Amino acid sequence: MDENVLTPRPETEQIIDEVLSLAGKPILPGVKPEKPALNAKGLKILDVGTGSGCITITLKKELEEADIYAVDISEKALEIAKKNAKNLNATITIKKSYLLNNIDFTPDIIVANLPYVDKDWDWLDKESLKEDPGIALYAEDHGLKLIKELIDTANSKYLILEADPSQHQEIINYATSKYQHQKTNGFVLVFSKC
Image (cartoon, rainbow, N blue to C red; front, side):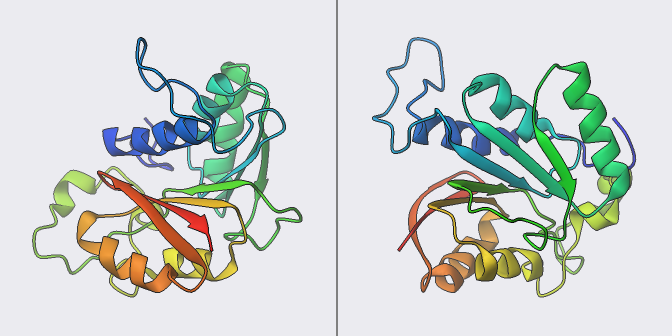
């Protein structure tokens, strides 16, 4: 763990499951995979707000034939992601970007575990989150500012977002002009381009 990136949490694994499902890869041993929506070979996947790189690196290990990219606004997080990728022998492209500002290609899939916590949630246990950097946790507009900005600028075939279930309906409503809601898996929303 490092104070410059979020502590990995189980709900983030659902993002990886959804990408594997789209690529027709089995999520669990012995479970027949779904029919692939996308060919894994040459698939371009972009992780926005990569932090430690845990999503990006796992995707590269699971989908070796895919091209995996990661961006973050935090220089310190990017250093950690690069170190982790090197230590785990995962060849990914990592660069600094505020959301999609420095992206010069159209990814097939965008995944994002952006800051979505609203500081005003009355049920929030801030004490348990004190080890995590605020920049990676909290967002304005009831936690939805960055998610909405990403939806506004995204042009991928699929968009996979992590957010609190209390925010899901608002996100679905917001995305409706550009994306069709495909499914919800715990904390994760899967959208496809309209």
